[in-house]
Amino acid sequence: MNPLLLPVVAAQGLWLKSTIKPLPAPGGVSGGTVTGSDVARLRLAVVGESTAAGCGVARHEDGFAGAFAGEVAARTGQTVEWAATGRYGATARLIRERLLPSIGDDLNLVVVLAGVNDVLTGRSARQWRADLTGIIGDLAGRTRKIVVTGVPPFTLFPALPAVLARYLAERASVLDQVSEQVCGRDAVFVRSDFDTVPPGFFAADRFHPSAAGYRQWAAMVAERVAQ
Image (cartoon, rainbow, N blue to C red):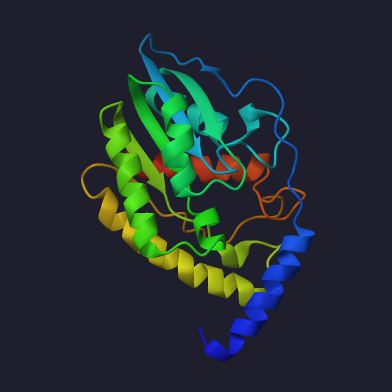
């Protein structure tokens, strides 16, 4: 980005902090079961930042974890037992140190939703690499498959001013490149590369997905994993 635009980025960043207010956490339990046609059962955990916590919807069933569990059950026929563990504002460091210990062992699939807060807080590619490597290493002995999603496209967030959105998108692209390298053969990296999003994709804060947005995102990730 043109260095002359950095003061604009800083001003827009301060404006964003003053206008974006945290949405209330979803109600109900943060897990459930989606019954499939097969007797086989699959244990799924979704861990990460506010999107893992279901920010933007009223029920965890309508967040990413519930939507992704439905996609997996529909595609495999298996009954999916799912649980979501997330925290608003969580960076990869916090996910690694505070959230991973609580998701259990003997899992079939873990999806990691992270990166937005690492971009927003200005964490470096080196820090991101170290923490993502640690996350994957920790999960390797606890689950059969690990999926790491890319950072959602900031340029599509209605809440973000254009200059700030482009700056954040450039930073996110660097983290995605690192993620692809770190995942290698040990995890599946799925870019969150939406070209456009339909009306109604975002929640009331115009920053987090709505129930419809989570369904679209979950379907895209499930399709890439199946491939």
